[in-house]
Length: 201
Length: 201
Image 1 (cartoon, each protein chain N blue to C red):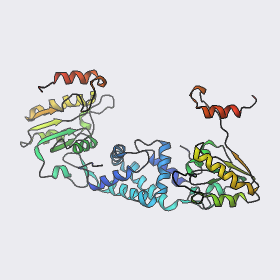
Image 2: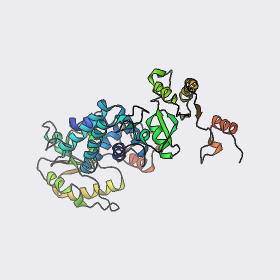
Image 3: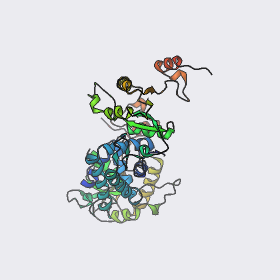
Image 4: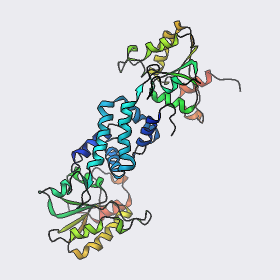
């Protein structure tokens, strides 16, 4: 990614910006120029926010969520149900569920899914801690909110097996027609699942 | 852009990342998580590079290019033709021409184009300095490398008028079929221009 004529400082900035997901070399150059035009409004605050977040934010030792405190704000919240734990793949998934306001219990972030292709084995995931938490008397339900991908479902089956001795009920998110979804555009698997799980109106 | 459960440090980082061109709220969240996973490799170096560039990089007082030195590396280069000045809209355009290695003279960055719609008038652009440079005895040619947009061409005509008294030859980039371009996919204006400017094989 040669930009020539731009000094090494700009080159370095562009190279680092291009490492962000969603930015390629061209958009990294555009971003660098944009930032240089808004130094005080965006560029310096962004530099501070990056350094600040890099120093302060850590993974919660209970659930794996990212926060400045340990335990994280979710684990520490007194008004959240302790008896339900929702298992997600990533912190991004946790944020998505929180934005939806769909769940008022605690979370557990696996940090990925089992994958033969990528060589991710059970030991690579945050599973031991989940078994430990599920064994707690207070916990009655584990909701598996994993992606509906092959790897996600393989992981869900593996977890359901591992959680059986803990004496908790293990559930997973419903499959069906997304809100606003048109049948004609849905895949066969989703339609079949929606049919199987049909309910009285 | 509520991410909930993420502390104010992450919220602030996501809000600032979302101000980059090419990143929306969703990709800013993804970028923040990506960065938090690569703190030492990307996040802290990026924070340093941003702060460093914000402090050191300035506009060249001669041509308007961005560099840590003033005059910039292009203006200071002894092996570049002083008699030719290529006028571009933005520093990004300057970089594009440098990457192509198409031009070995000096540049002049206008900082935009005249635009009735956006209220950009001649005084808002780096035009006075261009007239001053063009009046120098040593300069013989001004190449207008402005975008082939309506505003770009309006600006080119304005500059050609203004530069006439300077006694320099004013040229502009050729119009035609782009390398690798297929005629069937080109617009009528480009095809007509390519036809008018046809040359012997």
